[in-house]
Image (tube, rainbow, N blue to C red; front, side, top):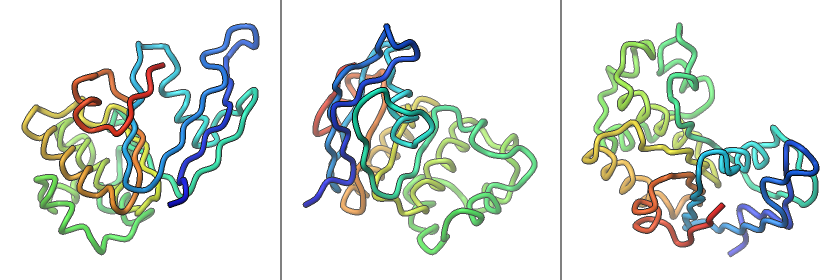
Length: 189
């Protein structure tokens, strides 16, 4: 099976004389989940920005297939004055919405509301729902369960892992226990 993400010899730093990482290599196939673990400021989120094309590497190449991302802060990823369902429909098909709603313990009615009318956990699950409905080959997850209680966190991670046949996932987390539980490989930054 071919790689859906190939990061080759990637070097990046905000200052040329101070690199966050040098010659980083990551390969990811459909069905795999890899976790990037490291301290705050180590460059974990910067890797996502590079994969998304929002930053240019100093050296190296990044090749990836269709990408979707779940941000750590769901409030910043939704427009405050439009209903969630309209924001989802703007960028994704809602054919499989009932399956994902059930798996994430969400009611469709919640999606008709504005972002500020939901709890942080509900909004984060809506963010994951939106990303999944985009049917990416590569799903970038930046601390996707940090706003969720332990029971919902387990349900969401199980749902994500059950979707691995359709995609590959790159997970940023500070939770080494979570990374050890779900990831095929842990990349320490």
